[in-house]
Image (cartoon, rainbow, N blue to C red):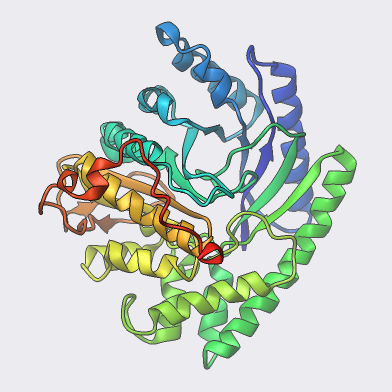
Amino acid sequence: MKIRSITLFSELELPLDLSHVRHLAETARAAKRAFEDAGYEVQTTRLATDLFPALVSIDAGGQMAATVVDLEACCREAGFDFVALGAAPPSSGPWVAEMLAATDSIFVTTHLVKPGSGRIEGEAVWSAARIIKAAAHIADGFGNLRFAALANVAAGTPFFPAAYWTPAPPAFGIATQAADLALEACLSAPDLAQAHAHLRDRVTDHGQILTQVSEGIALDRRLRFLGIDFSPAPYPEPADSIGAAIEALTGAPLGASGTLAAAATLTDAIQQARFPHAGFCGLMLPVLEDGVLALRAAEGRLGIGELLQWSAVCGTGLDTVPIPGDVSEEALTALLYDVAALAVRLGKPLTARLMPLPGRRAGDAVHFDFPYFADGGVLPLPGHGGPHPAESPLGRTRSQDLSPIRSHSQA
């Protein structure tokens, strides 16, 4: 098990207070040393902010993008690997792709469903679709790695790209790379119950150690500790695959009967483990970050419908999903509505990180020179190439809320 990220959360103001950024980075370095002393490898340190409202106020003459470039340089010099700007309102959509194109470590989000609202923001859905379509032209589709549409995702979630902050004192949280714990539990267990118990206990053991270290950091640095997101992020190696863990439980390729039950079992084990929970604390199924998921996508065994179905019982939604490059804004909008509706109806956090790949169609091979990605295949988009979505009710909701969809607790 590794720590994927120590994520610092803080308000930032313009003009940038460079001394504040350096102080946050020093805190992140001190935390990194503390976790390494406890025996954990720390892969990255990250900063999540609430800067977007301030950026919107300086939109004239390209000043917004220039300010973001300066912020990236400052944070990189201070020692942060990645920086999240916070949630972009729908009106700022035209600038998001420009920011992503001008940087390589800046992340942006937008809210399809604001936490606690129970309502889908129609204009935000359309804005997100336009951003995804525009960002597809950055680095052959790679630009969308750094943009996510959020539904019911709370501030203080340590995993990027979902991380953002609100006006509040600085804090920090931990995101893990713990797919190996899930695989170990599934390989050593004769049934679902034993896999559940093994994973729950292993996560509890590590969670208590990480908590003890984190509380020491919080006391020493006078910083609030938000908790740990133990969603078992994978890595493109056989020993770090959530897909392999699920297949070990089902005894069949991903997508076969039993996949849903396996995903629900692993998620419940994480959620029952004893540690301070933050963020999703569910199963992650990022298609391109997991060697088995990417392989099953290339084989045509994995589809967006299945990923949405599994999201109902596990984790983060549609993550690093490669789709045809000629997808329309209308088709993207319809898919984003599906994600948002699932999040609202179930009252759970979900995200959509969709990656249209220019010039590629369903079934085409996918390769990026990026250590966190495995080689995969472009997934077909349900309904892509069929009747134009603008002819449906969803095509007429650019500035409306889907208020008839409510959370289960409101039904």
